[in-house]
Image 1 (cartoon, rainbow, N blue to C red):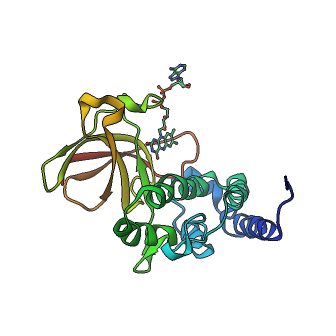
Image 2: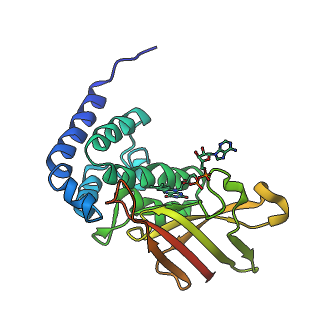
Length: 223
Ligand SMILES: Cc1cc2nc3c(=O)[nH]c(=O)nc-3n(C[C@H](O)[C@H](O)[C@H](O)COP(=O)(O)OP(=O)(O)OC[C@H]3O[C@@H](n4cnc5c(N)ncnc54)[C@H](O)[C@@H]3O)c2cc1C
């Protein structure tokens, strides 16, 4: 088994280290103190191809391997964990799920701009909405419902501690479609933040990674 990092791995590690030192380090304490979302840093991450590192190039990603992703995460997390948590949610929790389980239409419409971190030249990132007030470690006890109405689903519920809650344009929402089936009646839905009935709730005033915007998100009859 080969344990050496390849030339490409070392280049990615160095690029991430340079980005962390040059773009994240300046102002990291101030952003943390003032809970400022690191928008410029995330835009730069997108330019580097770090918002969809393991996504296939045909869907706007960089087509890199997991080791490359880990190396970049390590370097950025050492300096600014608010930037790296935003990057990790977009890569691991949103893009991964869409690439593995999304339809072709979903991949073209959502995965491609998410992996590029931009749409129409604006920041375009995702959030993953699983946790609820009564469903943290025990995620299967969640109560958000998505009722099948024939030609659409009706989504109702509250999600908590959502990273990128206000800065994301797209939410991957986990909801109960068949409560009688318990954990086997849970599905994932793509919801755009600006759809009617989506409410961005309170922002958490956290002890750390304060530049990352962690919010409660509410769904009131979202179609
Ligand atoms: C900064 C931040 C960002 C987050 N971002 C997101 C996000 O983007 N999307 C999202 O969906 N969620 C997010 N979360 C929520 C996170 O996933 C939950 O906090 C986590 O799942 C734990 O749930 P909990 O906080 O309810 O703790 P609990 O589940 O109540 O756990 C509390 C403690 O009890 C322990 N414990 C729990 N169950 C057992 C058991 N059966 N046996 C023994 N010990 C147990 C746990 O290990 C823990 O120490 C975020 C949380 C934070 C703090």
